Image (cartoon, rainbow, N blue to C red):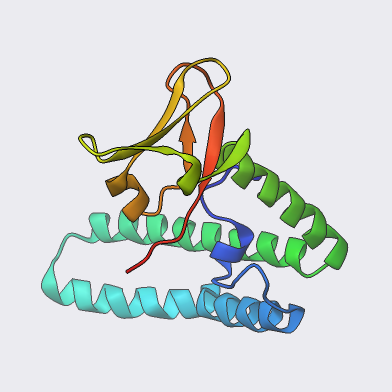
Length: 168
């Protein structure tokens, strides 16, 4: 349920700290936009345009069925997102699970290490610090410039978060 590539917030095109009123407004707007009657009107307009351009009615029918299923899927996702996010308790549970999933994706880190506490290698243009397994955590200047902050040990599965500020 929480491993989909799009969260309920993504589906409703809102931020995770949106108010219930913002959620409701966006839900109504998206539902109206994807409503089957409006979608059918759009399809009829498309069909008229396509009929002028081509005579292959079979491919038009297949395309319309596919578009209709895609639209139905979108409506179902909008309804599911609204059902979860409109209720404060179900939203709280969803948010907790979403955060837990993000932590799994980002990885749990073992410690926070200040960049100033790491050893700088001028030749490699990288920073390093020892792991408790005698391995090394290494991060390059390029990685830091791109915003990387969590790195893994070269020998084990432990990760650290590097604390630093980008100075421009």
